[in-house]
Image (cartoon, rainbow, N blue to C red; front, side):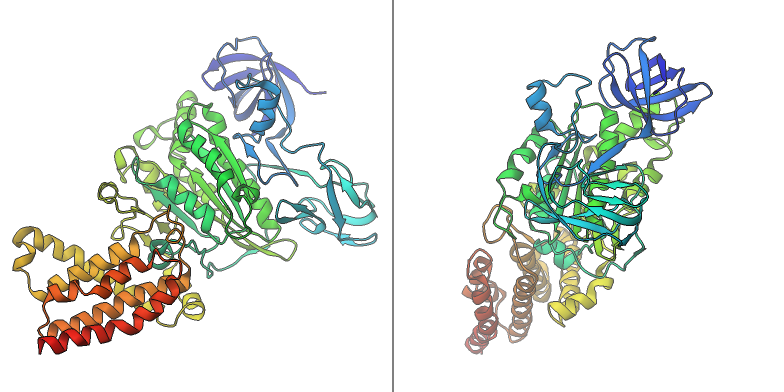
Length: 579
């Protein structure tokens, strides 16, 4: 029988209890409304609890009940296409039960107990099972859902029970009496085990030119997207969710404004999955935890997201996890830390901010799983620094952990350059690791082309400083040509419309061909300039306009192939005219 105590003290989301003896991270039920909370500190006979719901009205003396277990998630068929809150309560089910306004203490199962799933058993009596082994399969939306032995169980198969089953019906019974069901539970703060990690040598292709070509992310890698208000963090993450070659998408709206989260919840079901033609939501799990929800649940939401991601990784899938944003998560930690009267660190954040961020990002990776499959979790965290100040603690601590930095720039936003990713301050530490893949799967000249592009953009930045002092007219013609070619790279290649049906996605081959056309144009222009062709004639060549428009055409690949052969002959005509 669960032991009961009583409330001793209430300080916002932090409640102190006495009369119970739980373990750290155990879930308890607080007050007459039985609000869910988690033990975060034990001091003698008192237990400090962070409550996942609003605590106003709770008084000392109200009952507290132990559950004897940590915060657990229900993992099984039915996760995909569902919208949860930060502690895995399905919001659609709560709305049906409670109406528009959900009362405190309302509960709902994470997985539907009534839906029957057609279960295909893949083991037979006598088989020896260990943790992580696949015992059955079922169809979940457009994904084959592989039902696995929980990592901490194992034994010999005694009986199997195929057919249509709910998530809590027995499908396999072991000789030691253990019953395996389509669903199992796992604590959110404990990483699911894997047998080993793999090198991040395969890119997570996104179809976004500036990301794939200039600052690539590997499958199983970690990336941060910091940026001020309106720079496009949410749109960039939606593009990644829609176009990246991940099998499963987990989107965690952690402490974002309600109107932004509403956009995500209404737009995702309407988005078409380019892989299957069905709704994108069918391979997505959404976790909605807006800024007006209790801070403790916000703190838990990222762990809920990454645990679901690990579950699908263990099936052998590539998962991309979007956390929007980790700054709001850090603010929740700051508030709870202040309620606990802990010694504050930099700018009031707790001293353990860096370690918590590390624990979260380190749950990503590309792994060999317990059942012999390979999977990956790519974690992309948005950071919302106040005033766009990248020197604040959350951004700086994140930069020490992640290996890809996509820096959104308010000045680029003001110039209507989107994606507003600054190519001078962004970086990727996976570039060298991924070079072999690009050379084998895209083109052997990929590395040289990328280096030429980066060099050109860096020269442009240096020359623009000179131009501000003396003006472009006073600069040598070679430098003015460099500025013109860099402008072509920016306007034709780096700018990309998320809302144009063709330009929204660019395959790796297409990215190379488009950038190579600009390189051919640049080389031919330099040769023409050396033969006294005017810079005006070079810049106003009609084929340049065709190149600018090509990225919006449905037969873009054919057009680019034609342009690549026509650029040099067109420049030769200018040389002949100049001679």
